[in-house]
Length: 286
Image (cartoon, rainbow, N blue to C red; front, top):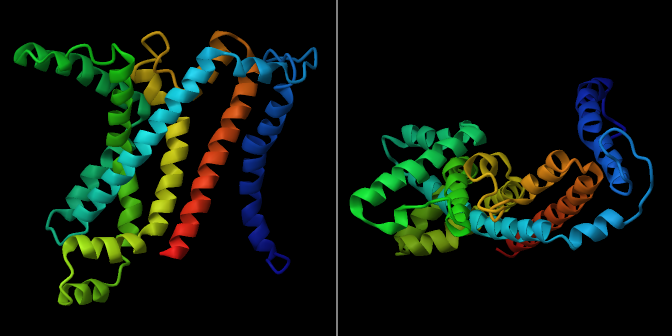
């Protein structure tokens, strides 16, 4: 670091300043305010751990953490399966592979709010019409229960993010030496054996990256939750990010919301970094 030129630090300074002003300083202030009765304008008293004790006794916040954890678990598994599956499809010698890459990635370019309203129309109107025409009750009342609302958010998220995860896997799949695959074919290895013993170990770093991104994204999801279910019915599909925002701006309890945000940050950090640690160890073993 001492040998870096002046030009290096000049180029790096705007990034460091932006990170400090937008992320680091607000985080420090927020952490301090979580121990006060801050109302968004001023703090009049230091109340210690009162906010933190209260949030662990609040059923709505704990339910939102449980719902978000379930969603993250399911979404991470499905996103990586779909992302890897799409990557395997488009890396084959297909004439339409470039078109397919574009089509699969396009949903990621659409904003979460817009996607939420689009899928809300699909789940309520389109599914309802299909249910009326076919007489299948399972198509009626989507988003009206916690269970269908949960799967609605999962479907929306997978449809939006699978193409993005696909790009990560493509980068590693295309770097696999062709000689290894050809040698395995000559030795009589089946397609499954080639995938298990060659392809999957060599894309393990992509799995680590994708797991980290999908985990952090799944825990922090907000706009899709807002536009698709708005936490309903009866806040049963309310995720942590929405619960914190509602506490801050609907209940006007800024310090309490900040305490929830600190706990949420710790949960996401621990889960994501633990995943990276164990996946990195697994890469070495492979």
